[in-house]
Image (cartoon, rainbow, N blue to C red; front, side, top):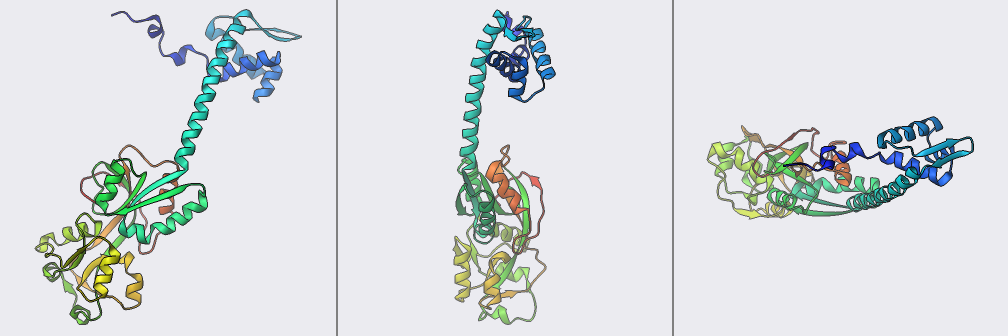
Length: 327
């Protein structure tokens, strides 16, 4: 199959003069002087002369007649200048459109976060972001880690935050901190008076007040107790950390919750922390985004703020990776 002469000639970018040369030719036509055209564009006259000569060699025609009285376009130069104006006008329209896209992107930020991060860390980060980007409107969707992954994968969020063991499938992520889960009860619970640490087997056998399946908290606990018989049938399953805390404070039963969420209750002795033996309940806090769509604009700035210093109860750290599961 034969190819057209344009295809034979190679890429268009190699056959057409660059935009800066076209802008210079238009300026020469406007000013009637290569020197004034150079000053208008902020370049030296020797650089302008060199650019015109290069353009003439590229096209194979003379474009400018130079004389002591100034610079005048040749007939071919006038024709090329008319074509160049159309290209420059199209480039200006392209630039305006690109700026509009950047402006639209930078005017909003959609964040999806798992409950613990949404309640205890994000408010501080968003206050700092507002100081840097006062014109950016931020919307926040809060749910469990499965919910966060779904919002990102359906392009309903620009950046997500999850707690758990892995990066959800289809997402990339970076570790922004760490958290511990702790066993807590009301002061009236028998565990609050025990003198020895609670064992993993006893914790696994005890009905607890827990977050729902799909939450990062539940995922970490399920994995930690898998070798000890698994989590007993929950006493209650609730969809928010606040609801779980309220139930535990009321004396309904013990729970395992994020250390981030317990500062006020532990300090005020409304809840008691129960020492635990032989069980590691540590988890990573991650920022996540769709694979291949690394954060830009406000999302990039928010990600940077999460790494600028540790939040309450967290350490800092970074890392990337993909995997399956729910954070």
